[in-house]
Amino acid sequence: MNRRLFLQAGGITTLSGVFPAALTADTASTVIDVTAQPGQTNIVGPDFPATDVWGFNGEVPGTPIRLRLGQSVDATIHNALEVPTAVHWHGIRLPNAMDGVAGLTQPAIAPGESFHYQFTPPDSGTYWYHSHVNAYEQIGRGLYGPLIIDETTPPVVDRDLTWMIDDWRLLDDASISGDFGNGHDRSHAGRIGNVPTVNGRFRDVVKVRTGERIRLRLINASNARNFSLSFGDLKPSVIAIDGQSVTPYVTDETIVIGAAGRVDLILDMTGDPGSKMPVVDNFYRQSYDLTQFVYEQSPLRDQPLDSAINLPPSLIPEPDLANATAHVVTIAGGAMGGLQRAKLDGEWMSLRKVAQQGYVWAINDVVGNKLRMPPLIDTKQGSSIILTIRNETAFPHPMHLHGHHMKLLSIDGKALSEPRWVDSPLVMPRQTMKFAFVADNPGEWLFHCHALEHHAAGLGALVKIS
Ligand SMILES: [Cu+2]
Image 1: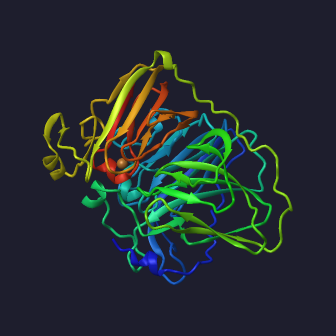
Image 2: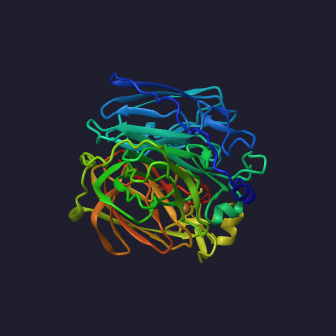
Image 3: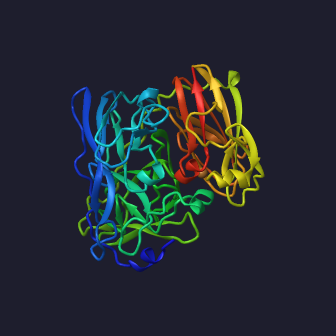
């Protein structure tokens, strides 16, 4: 892995890193036309060449899609790539046929073809859309964008800002390293890159004003990098996790956001005019400045706003814990994981033999080498499920359940004071998390690790609801 680029490109760049105008409409239906196509963007800064990417409408992040709660999405996705693709609407509780998992919920969109997605998001919040075909390469090359569903009455802020945070593995000429899905990434932490970005820009700066109130929507679009962000002395208020509201709480701890996860913050910019403040990531051993706030000379106001910041309560149905069916899911394998053998296509074999076919992970001893497999959970629509996920590996796994949110009840046996809804919880090594949810959305749903190389190496399963 080439770490030189990251270490040598020292200067703060002044690229703007702003989104193009969002695709929005005031009508009941939002009509969207998006093309998956090659593009070019300057990721690292003016001292480096532009990077060839794949993006929605050729941009990274792709064209933002934004609508109000209650509006439907009418999206045509055209494929102008030379490879098949499909679009998954991450975190949205939508009909199974619209979920975008090629090979499970739809055929892939062939080059030159298009696919029509139609659904009405039932929840407001911060989501994203991304490719779900060879995702470790297609997301790694930039095929993702923000998907924002506005509350009917959002909290009053001066600015509503979205940061899609990503992590690129670039060569010295700023081109994308083509070693997607290699054996080391599959069996270790996934594809960890050397150029972490905010909205496709490395070490950009974000201009702010003293007294300004910002709603910051963090979306982790990395293949596998997890973030643990420090906002200095700003003391952010967390208002939503994975799109769902939480009772706002102020934290001076770092904000942990696993791959595919989202966190909404309220930031009151309390720094002095003219000052600078880095946003630091310290999830891994080497901490670094992800981006930097730069205060303009003129303050916006003397005192921060003190209006309410809470979001409307989540609309997701509450599970019936007393009558729920319990399932335990054990994740095993990977490097330093100690897994001896596992079942591949119904046959027990040594991990060495499994690894010869490119797979190194198992869920309840079963290698998820296909999308369509005998289900891990097979249940009736409307039933409540208690799901315990045990991570018996040496690596963190952001576990994503499609079509549903799960309520996180406890971590390592310790009950949360306020259980919260999640769709991509980051389960740390040796950690056990307990969740509950209502299996109310019929279909065959993917349940997989969103460290995309882990999914490709067997860390996936099906939840069937009929
Ligand atoms: Cu994983």
